[in-house]
Length: 232
Image (cartoon, rainbow, N blue to C red; front, side, top):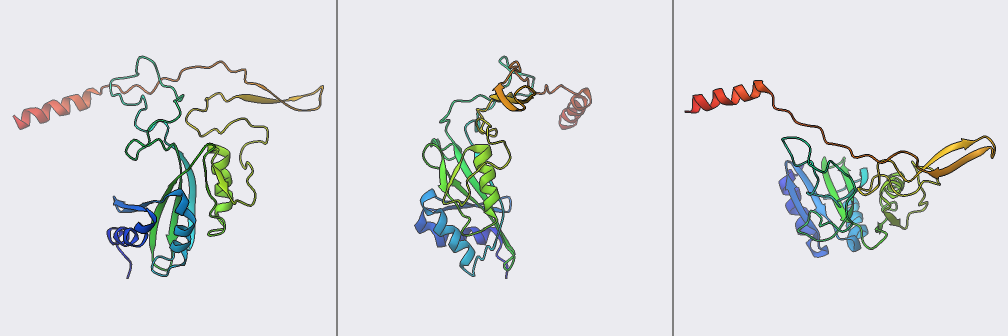
């Protein structure tokens, strides 16, 4: 019998509370917050124990919480006076009660035999951020972890081939970090004299992007006025 999301969350909490795992259910989805030191044994148990049997890693991705809850998009009347910028200060409190945990890795798991799904979240430690590789648990994590390393700079300890996978070997920085400039750091071109590709400082002028302005629509204003009259 397939467990409901609520029952699965309760069972996971009971099973892994000794490992410091926090498990919650919201809108029909179960999320486990796993300490970095316990990531491998917890993942192995999720795969091997018949009650859970999460045989498949569907997806793995990085998350940068540096601007969590402090973005300039909190406006309904138009753009802010300073415009919108992706530049943020490192160490901004994360979503877990104010602790300064910037980078996380999120794993989406599927149990075909038990028809169950679960989301596992693990915050990276140290600088540069690092977590254990789960390639030995789910081999499909290989390319996913390389992608998270390339785009977020998260190191996966124990990965068999920790190289960039999307950007070029000479690329500077990690483009999915919230403090990475939209124009980048370098640009490349083919130099006919040197007969090779060369890298140079980016020549694009920095610019401030203004958020989309939300304009009032008279149709909705009239509808709200009519509703107010009806309520009166």
